[in-house]
Length: 347
Image (cartoon, rainbow, N blue to C red; front, side, top):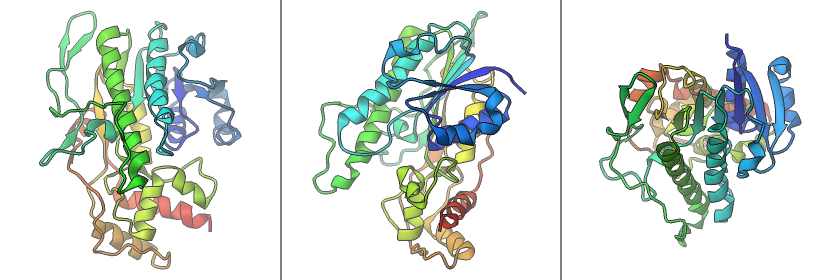
């Protein structure tokens, strides 16, 4: 059991709350950074009150707001980032980019900080134009050299020679399908934030190891959801719409929330070196397989999914996460069970 101190942002969200619980269960102490007080989160973590302290920073893009807030911290987990909602670029790009770089810069001023883990997304590993024909999405590999003082990494082994650039001044709206504009803006924000993270690491050369995690669509029980309608506030809404509406625009490339939470804790291991990036995706599934799971386990749920459902999918390679983080992925069935049990429990 560890008694080291983690500074965590985004703990009031779906992934953040699960990660906070996983860290506390592992024995870490948490300094939880929130934009505003959360009675719901305080209640969720009440049994760990001796390990938890809360601080309020209303604007995470303000670099000076972190002054003295990171004192004595050993690790930083940065999960706070905007979710797909609305069509205003300013609601996506500055919070995603400046919110990340502000944390990275503040952490570089605190010598006790050994590692920063940034929660990115599979979207940061996919060009804005989509996965190229024949392409496979995977995490970046790095070549390490032991220089005696510390591990220096050079990005000599890239996963994909794709164009991850984003023109912030571009028009992200699709007149034919305006409903996808929020997702396009979200995708662009993740690419911009990841590019800024890599640039910071290369230029600032901070004293801490910097690791990024790139989960696919995260599914499972939401610890901070309090009503059935709350499912639509996060990625679980995608799987819910697959099951209940047979929505063909939703992705079946998923990962269990608990696998993502545990990956954050595994990434703190000193063996996980500076510059590591991990794609987090659970076992491959198909539309027909999901349909069979749903109708076998929840025959009276009113689900519209059938065995001719396809959904959105793309090839991935998660060998790096499996090998280095030691992740054994939970099944897609467990994602379905956890989501459906929670949703039907609200009825």
